[in-house]
Every structure is written in structure tokens, then in C-alpha cells.
Length: 110
Image (cartoon, rainbow, N blue to C red):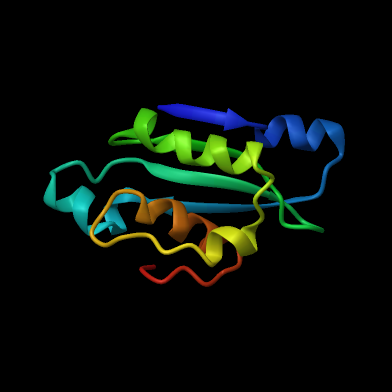
């Protein structure tokens, strides 16, 4: 399990409008092939500007994957920036991209 940035609770308490993307590892081919389909990637974005506010990963290689999202927060990336990024296939990192797409209701593998 790994987490970076804000939680939903913190955003709610601060009155920040946000959107949530959540994507299960069971829909990621590499996770299934590795026998580790349990868990998810959850991303939180500002509702107005799409800035990445927080991310949470439960599942395989969470501590390795969270670094990319930490960089995203530090670099002030938006959902559009992540949408425009190419994620290799098959990789666990595809769940980051899919989570962002899920926040817009356009996840590819769900």
C-alpha cells in the first residue's frame, strides 16, 4: 500500500471540489498474469483545473508505482497531462492511466 498527496477526507474537510478515478488491478493483464490481481489505483484531481491532488495504490508494486504520482503532484501535472502520457503495455503502471481515464468515465479496460 502507498499513498501520496491529499486524501478524500482531507479534500472534503477543506471544501475542495474534486473528482476521483479508481481502477482495479484485476483489469490489468500484467497483474493477472503475475497472479496479483487484487488491489487498485485511486487518483484525485481538482474539479476545476484537473490538477493531481492525491493518489493511493493498494496492490502489487504499490511502493514502486507511487513515485510516478509523487512526481506528478510535485510537477503540478493535470489530468490532461496524464491522459497525454503513453503507458507501456503490459505494465502495472497502466492502472495509473486507467485511473485517470476512470475519473472522466472513459476507462479503456472497464
